Length: 232
Ligand code: PLP
Image 1 (cartoon, rainbow, N blue to C red):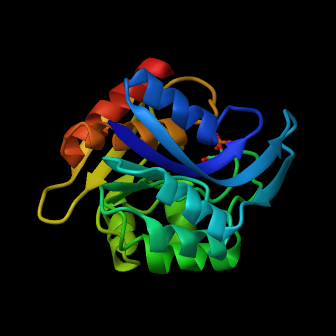
Image 2 (tube, protein in one colour; image 1 turned 90 degrees about the vertical axis):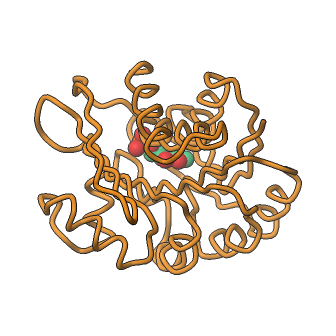
């Protein structure tokens, strides 16, 4: 059973495709990959980016053959977004709206971001923003109540939202799952000290993996959160 990973290659292996592949191995799933960009990332937070041409991204997705779910990470620019939107298979799609590295280097440009909202939010089964990403996407402060942030993301085209609280405060990292026609679901785990790279990639990939295995959104998110907790 295969999951399609559409993401960027982080040369330091802390995040991106290398992390996504590790999650698939941990879940006992096969992966197919479509690399959207190559990056050179160093320990000081430096990050050079080289997007893959859209036609090549589309060719990788077509070459993947049948898959049961897809995870979308770094999308780089509007050309990549268009290629992905036009070639994705009709399977559950988890979109991690990656905007920047932890060190603050942009991983998608302004036109790419607009294209992601217009073309991929409506296609995605679930989007998985953290609080800074949700704030940037909606223009609302990070302290805004989770249900209001999620409603603003739905107004931008999202179908379901996992709002991740890892960047918040408190003894627990609290994520909220918002779906149409279901009450909000609170998912909490003990907050781990420090910051680890690749947590967002790990969670989104694990959700896609659980969806591929047949879980519904709530079970997939809870299973992925437990997986992330175990890894951390
Ligand atoms: N580099 C790539 C290619 C990524 O896909 C991501 C996140 O998805 C990052 C860097 C950022 O990772 P972190 O926030 O862990 O620095």
